[in-house]
Image 1 (cartoon, rainbow, N blue to C red):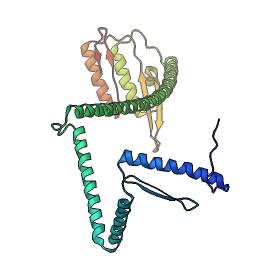
Image 2: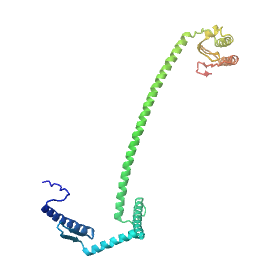
Image 3: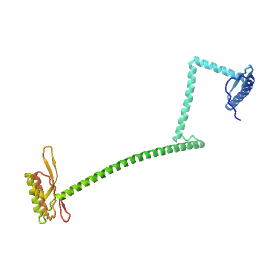
Length: 292
């Protein structure tokens, strides 16, 4: 059967009011007795019923409790009138707080492993368990932080990898475009480059190249011999209407000796000095010795 909660209000029925008063009074006195026994407290209860009947309970002596109450009331009145009592109370509070700080400081030193000589075996075991629990919590928090940092680093690495992949794709596309452009230029140059006769010697070809370069510099319009030995790669027109031309020569069947190589280098050097032009002369002999 479920008990209904009684509303806290005045009971109108006189009989029910007296019954409730009797039950609650016995319960109140029982709680007071239990509090006095458990906590060693002095308790005095004085109760007057609605009919004016006196009921009282005291753990020791009612008169002693009343006298003590009167003395405490007088002390409170003195405290209000004289500040010295207020200062004494504050000094007591300060002493209690100071002792508490000393105790907490000593416990903190124990946690740091200091001043352990005065502890017994039981205190040491409790301290060990407390430190182990703290270490486990620290290790758990450290692991969680470590996992979070790893996740952040993985996210950053994935972003960098995606950027590198995009950049690599762009580079591949650009390289393919450049290769196609180079292949187009090479195919165009092969169709425009004349083939030299097999009977021409290396020295005559070099002389013809030098003479052609000089004649081209002296008279740009008379460039028949020069065009037979090479082809115009590209030209650049500057802001001062100066046309800079870049030429390439392809010479096959070269059988230069070492002296002829030196002669070719000298002629190329002289041509660069006379014409104030840049010349890059590359000779590869049959035994793969390279001169530049």
